[in-house]
Image (cartoon, rainbow, N blue to C red; front, side, top):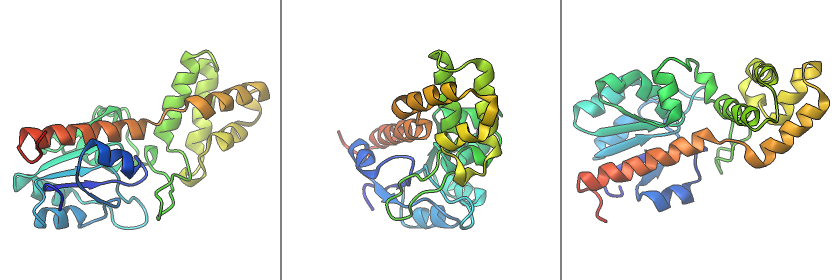
Length: 222
């Protein structure tokens, strides 16, 4: 284990980028029992970013609470980490980032918001999480690319798709005649260069917070 820090990370952020932010024992997206295993292995800080949703049993609340009761700092953000932190922040789990705050405040409620499919070997995302689509649509509206009504129609289209099918192109296609073809083309061009990856931004914020906590605790040295 590197410095007593364990980070569960998959498609939310490239591991090479993460490693430059904080030295840690980087592990794949967490499943049920992985937090318990990290705690038993001597982790002093556990940062939960990515976790499995549907393939296996998800990270359990009890294992996080057990880690907290042992004095382990548990930080969550971006994906499964944001979900669990929003549910357990009153019990000591620390949440980081916009997605965590939206869940905590009840503005997001479904796991579906952060779900995506990815290559299990490279962790490369193969679909777009709904929260990223939401944020990109908001930016497109702010930039005058789409109207507020078009934003809501495209969001409704995205929400109606099963999460593995969500891509910007399919969202536009699925919207059908509700969105003019030229508007869809303009939005797709915007998304190609200005798409918001909120999950990545929150993951990076959590990694920076992990480093900060580790420095404060003397686990890492400058």
